[in-house]
Length: 255
Image 1: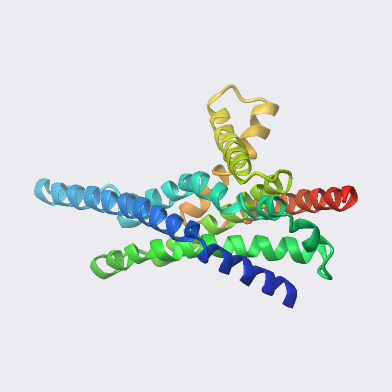
Image 2: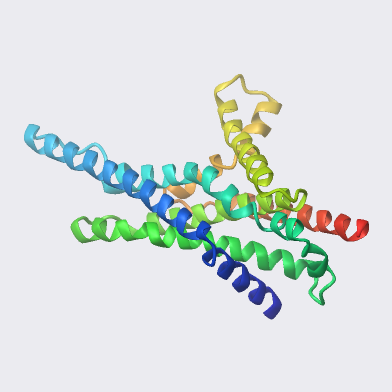
């Protein structure tokens, strides 16, 4: 396990030694901040109108602000994850260091887990910086922190599954741009499968709807820790890691 932690730390340092980490943090923080303050503005305006008319608020702070905010973040993953995963193995191939990595004393599963955990840690850093906005929410309001914590857990599990798939795509090409584009379209496809729920229900549409990545985040956003959705994200993560391991074996065999 020490080797896994070492590789994960190295991957995380590599992100922050290049401009990509700071660009992603700035972009994610800007978009998160825009969503946050827009939703707070609408909540304050709705509260003011309700007080002026003597009506009760139809939704509370968690339902109107936090739930919609986390939902928007789930969609934002589609654009951030490809930029995080594109370099994991494609960069090793383009630099010609993949052979050195595979012939090192490290085991394949240590390399996979280390790179994956490093990428997940980078995404966790994005969430950490974005959560600064929530300080104002707790300073001036009284939201329930438990649904928020479960929602962040859902975002992290969703990102972990997406990164595992992105890492697999990065392992089959040496071009980072190609890896990012292919990952984006794969994740986009797994997102639009949710639209199948609006069509006539049959066995095919039910399966396609179920494998939609964002659909399984709905329970987390509502503050419900559903083991079915948790197992789904863990299963997708395992699938991505398994496919990456097979991809590395083929590289080792060809080498």
